[in-house]
Structures are given as C-alpha cells and as structure tokens.
Image 1 (cartoon, rainbow, N blue to C red):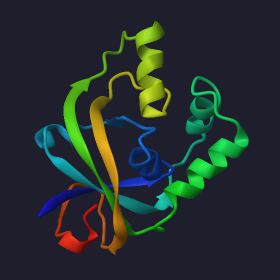
Image 2 (cartoon, helix red, strand yellow):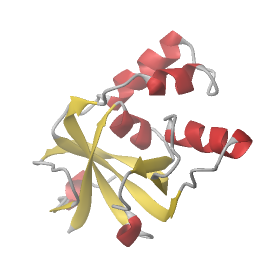
Image 3 (spheres, one colour):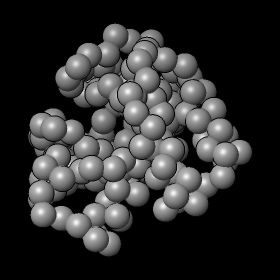
Image 4 (spheres, rainbow, N blue to C red):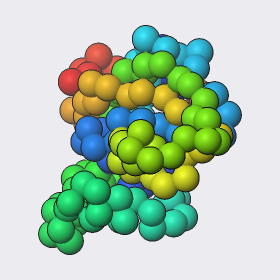
Length: 152
C-alpha cells in the first residue's frame, strides 16, 4: 500500500514534472512520511490563485509557450487519478521572519508566494505512472494500492 495525497492542478503536474520540489501545507501532513514514497493524486478542482504563473514567468523565466507546454504535460492523465509518485523528504516550519534570497529560493521551489508559517516538505525523484489509476482522493492522506504493471 502507498499513501496518497491530492494536489490541485497545476501543482500535481508541477510536482511530477520536477518543477515543484517543495510542498507547502498549513499542517505538517507529510512529516510522518519522511523517506517514504507518496502517490500524487490529481484533484478535480484547480488551485484558486495565479501565483504560480508569476513564479514560473518571473524567477523561473518561462515564457507563455513553455508554461502552456508544462501545463499540458501535467494534464496528461486527466483528473481524479493517481498520476505518479514522488519521494518525501524533511518537513519543517517556515519561520514568519524569513525573507530575502532564502525566501525567494523556497518560493521558486514551491512555485508559490507567501510560505511563512507554513509547513514545507522537500519532494524529490518524481515519476509518472505508466497509466493513470482512477481512485477517490480526499482532503487528507489516504491509502492506495498501485498495481505493479503501472509502476514506472
């Protein structure tokens, strides 16, 4: 069994395409999963907000065409599915006082602005499943059995 977590788009795709390497949550949801593999579930709903566009287009220097290609890649298996796996690293609380270059670097890695007082988790080694696995996600961690033939 693998533990799964739902990500809204475009973040699910950004995680699996290796662009987003830091996940941020208000609660330390991923802390117990350090050094384990997480199943990335693509939520039906989109992330509300356009901060990711500002980060991709600003510090990460992507143009509109590159952004669209990245978004398309992230939608390859559709929604409401486990689309891939990622390894979970350390979780830590981002201090309210963090600013400057260190904060900018984390915002680029999270593809999100305003990380202070959120729990941040390092993500690495993302890989897409060979095919999507249709499962019901949830607001929290859930268990999912991934058939061997889908593993990358």
